[in-house]
Image (cartoon, rainbow, N blue to C red; front, top):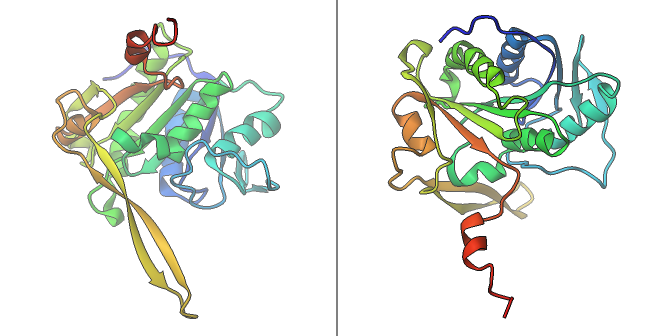
Amino acid sequence: MPTANFELLERVLVTNDDGIDAPGLRIAEQVAGVIAKEVWTVAPDTDYSGGSRQINLHKPLRINTHGGKRYSVSGSPADCVMVGVGELLKDKKVDLVLSGVNAGVNIGGDVGFSGTVGAAMTANVIGLPGVALSQAWKERDNIPWEASQKWLPEILKILIKDKNWPWKFVPNINVPAVPSDEVEGVSISQQGYSTSVSPLIEKRKDLRQQEYMWLYLSKDHGHPGDDEDISVLRSNRVSVSFLTRSITDQEVTTELSSLFEK
């Protein structure tokens, strides 16, 4: 899937929701280095998974330097995009915000919770192309990062060379949990619509015998259609779905358009 005659972007801003020290961030920086002349990183100080598009309006945000063009922020992935664009790069044009590579998938019904997707959507809201990148895994201590490292640069080149660039949509790209040479290809998919998400609460007590709760999301992928992101991943193909900031249900809007016009 090599892409010839690709013109490098001038500048890419990289962020994530797993934190500045996450291995997937290094993969994202390498991917960005293949498609851009200049790579800047602005990521959360710590793991901010599940942060969605949260922005912090009621607490101070602090910037820490990590050498070169690498910074961390004491906030969410969305905060990182805002601080990166509005402060650290306020006098420089950002061509693309690359969010990831997340350790774990961002598919189906829980996409809205994702800080990885949230950062890419935040870029979209402020008028910049954003893309969310995620790597599936079966064993957390054996994540096949080389699959993302190999496949993502060429996928991004193809999308950037397309006539729709600069995108008004947000590509959500998920790489399957297999080594790079076992990836079967790339498929355009639908965000999973058969997945259901429910809260799983575990109650515990600390050493002072005070009760606290640990929240987890329980997911049931049901019986997904062939066009859904989960089915694409299960077939060892990279899933590319196109998200939009609009969450209006157009079909229902049309159906109920005359409801209050009597």
